[in-house]
Image (tube, rainbow, N blue to C red):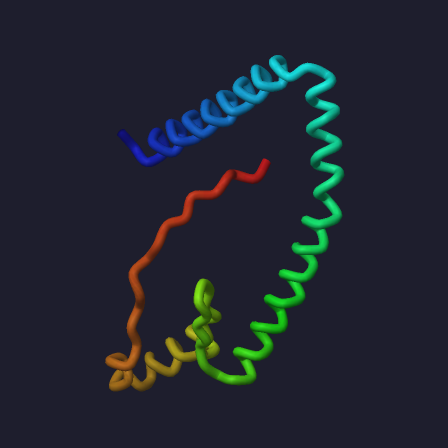
Length: 125
């Protein structure tokens, strides 16, 4: 089977999964009476302010932790979470270096190329 055929098959499986999830939700929605749906909406509305406050506080606290760890310059481990500090990545102008390498081949041993990787994304339409 070619890669294109496998990608098409994978897309079909993802579509089937989406369709199955939709059908399942439709059946669940069909079981729920209007009264139960109203009660669910009321419960969701009751908890929304608390959930929003927790989300906001979490976002602020996460930003504060990141700032603190950046200032410390080292990772910090809590009981359940850790903030992992990573040094900034070094970037080089590969085009310029390749031009330099063509004139100075003795530096070729300094260049390494990592393994390629693959990510599967939806095709934009």
